[in-house]
Image 1 (cartoon, rainbow, N blue to C red):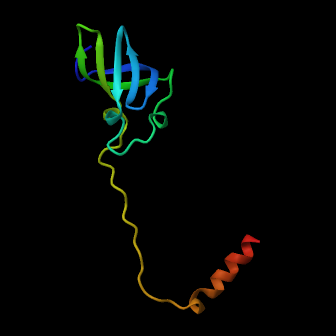
Image 2 (cartoon, rainbow, N blue to C red):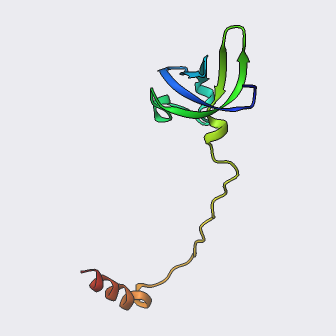
Length: 109
């Protein structure tokens, strides 16, 4: 295992500042800041104790057998652009569309 690798980590506990995990024979932490680029109210919204997840290795402490991981680097949407809705601005009287409105209403009943 080296920095940048994608590993399978098992969630062992969740605390207010992150989630503790095990990866092979290493103990690790996914800090709360590594779950999302946005505000994280509750880590349990992302993972559950006992769950196995994919995470990216950020740092390894070989001497103490510890690892720091990132959840967000693999589980966030990147570069997705939404379509901008088109709006028609202006006033139309109901008289123009009244017949189709009534027919659609009758079909629904």
